[in-house]
Amino acid sequence: MKITSVDVILVTLGRAATESSPWNPTIIRIHTDMGISGYGEMGLTYGRAKNAAYGMAQDFGRLILGMDPMDNEKIWDKLHRSTFWGLGNGGIVMSAISAIDIALWDIKGKALGVPCYQLLGGKTNQKLRAYASQIQFDWGKESRCLVRPEEYAEAARKAIADGYDAVKVDPVGFDSRGVWYGHKTYGIMDQKHLRLSVDRLAAVREAVGPDVDIIVELHAKTDANSAIQFARAIEPFHCFYYEEPTSPMNDGNMDLISKSIRLPVASGERIYTRWGYRPFFEKHALQVIQPDLGNTGGLTEGKKICDMAHIYDIPVQMHICGGPIATAAALQLEAAIPNYLIHEHHAAALLDENIRSCKYDYQPVNGYFDVPDLPGIGQELSDEALETAEITTLC
Image (cartoon, rainbow, N blue to C red; front, side, top):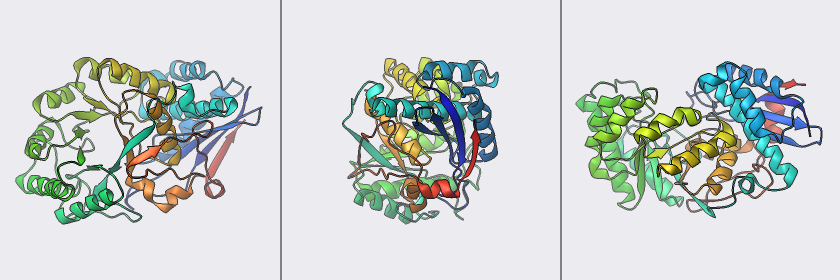
């Protein structure tokens, strides 16, 4: 089997959980001479990297023409080692490698007539527990910016009513005007915003009761000082874990936070490949890892990272903030790994525009996902998404 052409697809159907945030799913579709096509999504759907993502996917897509799509390890190594920038582990470069890799696994599963989890070790986990992610944007078919603690409480109650027994919230993000990180959160937090942030989390805990797990997310907008300050202030709420309390660029800072607070620390959406995770493992600086398959190296590298984490007794929560193709790929790996912890179901995954961008709508029931059993990753773009997308074909 040979790769005959590669489509780089910028999906215009869909939106982020907030209107002000960019939302640009970039998809790679690989075609073969046997009529089998595979899909992969770059982990740059949110944030400001649209043009870089679209260009990098084209640069790397040209390099795999004529290769055998079943040789995913060979192709991964070529893109990582022979493109110069691959060895630097940058987010843009790794996202292109990741999307190509996921598309190759999709082809492999379709060619063999099995879901990818069967090729990754089989179904270790029959059902996948999920949490309602980013409830500071509310929860449901419409999203908005929440400010008052009682609004956070109501959003949490909506998620619990949908069957979840775990939620994630960034109680620090919106200032009192509803501006996303419109206030200083590094150094030492001022008492006014510290109190508002604590009150929001207190409202969530009161709303959901003692038995619901609460994940606190800070989007790496705090530094070591303010992250430690805030963690100590929220100890009474017994949170599940503490996500991205600071940038992962200095593993020593993450290590300091981990050893200074009484919460498990999580990070990973901006840590790339085994080499990026290694210092965090060796220092035991993270108690939960959150690799994003769309930027850490795809299913090939993601499985290796999860296996490395298992050596250090570190559980895995895949980071998912993208379109339905990203969700489908994550479900396949989550089904296979023994150190799976919980699945992130983002508020954006509930929005109709994002659901319509693909053929299948995978949603948890009573807080749990069933693993898709279709061949490959079990997801493809819809006709509606393809009709409105910007597509460049490489052949």
